[in-house]
Image (cartoon, rainbow, N blue to C red; front, top):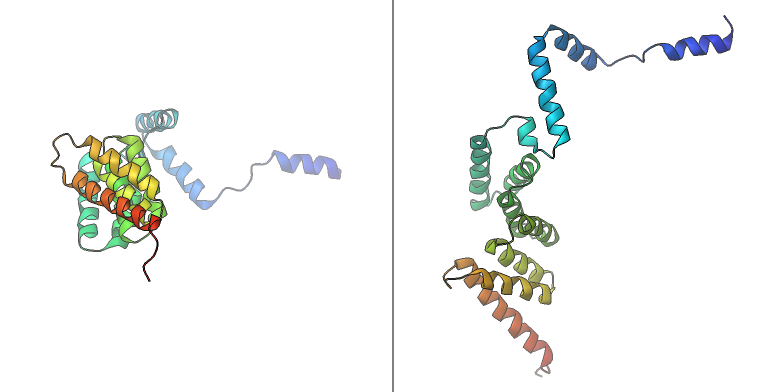
Length: 193
């Protein structure tokens, strides 16, 4: 056999598969065909639609809620690293849940990662444009970043969503909006000697 024919023959051979892939193929051969078909349909359905990772792993809503409660408890107790990991994971598992993004934003805000908090609050607001908490907290993050006009806009939006005048987050927005106004006045005044 000449060299060209030898190369052609080698390219026809399958590349060596990894031991993991081989073990997976062996396991699939042993699995009941109806289970394999069911799993195949499920994966195809998930890839065709924009499904959440939670669907892929078949995590029940109760499990996600439990993880969320644990993340919130970590947040409340000052375990921000743990809270970040949990809520970052939850935003991957269920990216359409605005609360997970809101809590990840709050965690970043407490860690003084204000640019990251703005991003997460913005995602939360894209998912729920009536989220007073995210408007207030994003406004406060803008304030920490020195972006006063954006902060004032968010505080105004939070206030406008408070129909009763009793929402504690809208009341916080009112106080912070006043702080922005006073800061603006101080900038316009000459400094005292």
